[in-house]
Length: 321
Length: 273
Image 1 (cartoon, each protein chain N blue to C red):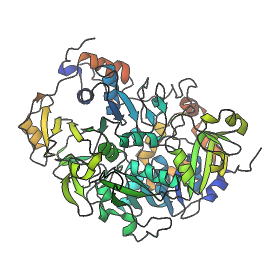
Image 2: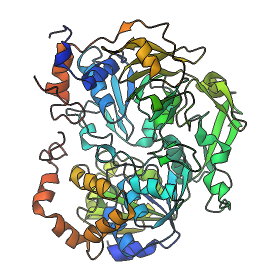
Image 3: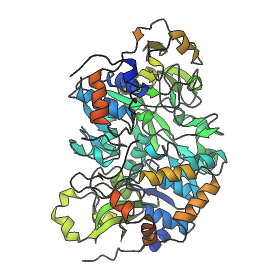
Image 4: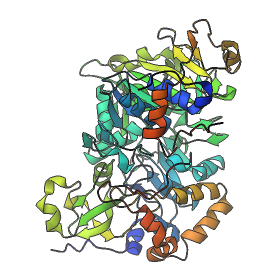
């Protein structure tokens, strides 16, 4: 049975409006929905509010392209291939972007709260740090806390009322308009099977109002339902699906292909300035579609990144010095 | 295996840091691993004195035994041999539940109370340089019984007071007022400990749990306590120095270079003269 959930990359990008809040699957440099990130940049989306459990190259591309007004998260960089987010850093320095800092666990618990329909989560993390410095409430300072999509407070303190365990911090549910996931397999009706670590994908898929799943392959739904215990996300939690092979490049996809470290290093090195970013975008994003991009990368590169099917990672990539 | 100490020309600074970090791990502990040198250090401990340690990767691999060193905690190499491949909710819940004995972390700046900054240099509202942000640094530091920081030692990085507390040390801020208090007063029933060591490129530092102040424990070969004190912006306590940091053994060097990181991803080999 086909559910009519299939859309194209262009249609998927059009679901994300100027000013939408947006989140992604993956973890740092793994399983980021790059084909769609590139398409958002081609369509020159503006005013995005990124709410991410953790950032990564996708943040850096969207921020560098001027698509993002607000970034709410805890970390951005390229791991081994670029030690910090140079585009975000530049825009923070120029006051061209608002950054709201939480800790990693706080961001995760915020998505868990949203995914379970709770208004907030309660935790003991990061007490005593400047994350809870009231002067550093960026969205509050900017007068953006409307209590609708943006919570009335960055956080609140409370005391454990049940067991007397002391100070706790309450962090608001992460309410987002759209989640874009990038996974190995999705069924025609939307059932998702993630191989390897699923990071925070189940939480972000459930938290968002609209969930788009970009997969390496769309497979028959009955194939996934034969072993439903191996599946990660429920069919009806997914609104739209699309098949985009190698769609996570330059980030990696467990069991399919490795991170393209050389590509990320090149991006990090070349995009310290806005001119550098614009030049990189001209070369790798504008004027190309996904197939054009893959063609430009070329077969030798993609074969080198391709994972060994027994080991689940590439044995061809040179990793060290 | 040869447990003799290696000669100075047989190892580099990264080897020394890796071995010092590895020796912080005790057998049977549950250890939270970050990317980079700490990952090599933990796997070195697993190969030598702590064969029963349990490894958690922040991205969601639980009780990992990777056959090859992962380049990041999201790496496909984390999964093979693990008890479970899961997600962040498991990793952080397990940490908040109190399972984690030890975490390895890094930082751009550390102060005399073990507070660490990875967020920005200068005023937060108008920073000179925006850095990566917290990542899981404050979370591991809040939840684990002990944390060990590995840092490049520069005077500007060893400050009296970090410009932004990303990760909580022994004396932290009591918000909303912001007065400085011992972390025990803030964390209540969740108090389990705090930073236990800083391993810098000059020496190994520890903390007095009561005063929360840092002191010098050992100097890496070639550094005197006075020289190291001069490399801190605060008045470093050098009255408790126990000696020189022990060099790597030949066995440890064998594991680092032949087994764990033969590709020299994190630890370069010292070229024979």
